[in-house]
Image 1 (spheres, rainbow, N blue to C red):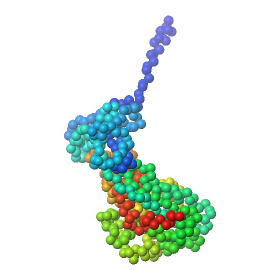
Image 2 (cartoon, one colour):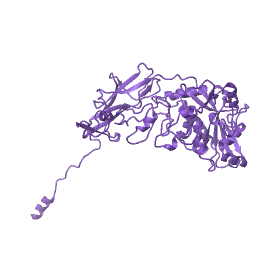
Image 3 (cartoon, helix red, strand yellow):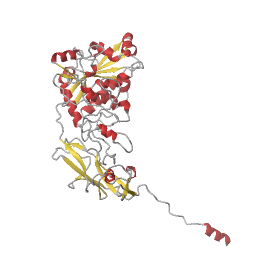
Length: 484
């Protein structure tokens, strides 16, 4: 009997397991945003629409000693299934990605619902209206509800006929490497052309503010004498041992001094020099080349900073030549070894960089050559653009008002809580980034950390102007090198 009692006393009822799920949350707030504050009405550009979900996270005391609700974002990976819908301000349902054909209105307003809960102002805006106690931020005026995400609608730039630019790769190799391991696979060169065409011909790009200069880079099939090339777009330059010594001492000076070998008429070809990789070559050659590859030589009376803005210290490097001077310059843009300007008629690449399919290594230099201004995050000083003279890297604004911050979620209390932040000024855009990750991602190719492959409308306008006015970029007007 005692045994039975003991067993009864020691036995216990099995409790129901704790059934906590990561997606058990009570939705308290919804915000709506789009992937861009600008949409081009061209039937191609697409606008993504997004929501953020929040739960209540206790309270905080604001700057006026009033207790306010605190919110905490629900990470997307923890979302349960929700009924998410997007609408225009008048209640018209829309399904992202959103695009339009005509700019009948100059502004669109969007809101969202999640399980019937309507989106409201951003948390950053809420905190800017009611900053936490002790904050040095001046409160902003309360924003009225209902709130919307505003998107400016832009007319597209006219896309003219395709501009076919003949490309000639001057592939430079020592004689001793001609059949050795450093011989460059032609497929790598043709892949460069594909990358350029994808961006500057807007292939498969649906960026909401994208533009299309409608450029097609084409391997040249003829040399300057009209003879067919063995391989389209490829001109092999083989260096003797003596030439290797002078080339490795100063690559640009060697090219400048031998333009009859290294340079083909810039009115008929886009010159691209591909150098072999060598530890003896100055590494600064590749880093510094881009500093003078932006268009800086023009026919007399064509350029002004109003029609083609340049950073202030680049303006002083601009040359405007009369017809006689310009014709002479085109024949030998290298000039003397100390003052050559081959950067104005072509691009220079280290072959070792081409094995890495990196947009920054291949596409960004072409963007600069076509008139776009590269810049970099504040913390990435190694990627600053060099001024046209000197060697101290500097920050440069891209001088375009429509290159916005791509990740719009990181608005800050300090800037008033509005999303997007810093639109139209890269310097401000970088300086105002907070949150995690602290990585700047933009919607144009000239930002070093960008994973995007698009260019904005204003960047497209810069390229269009350069193609019409800057020597070295006008081979599209003479198709003889690509005509059978």
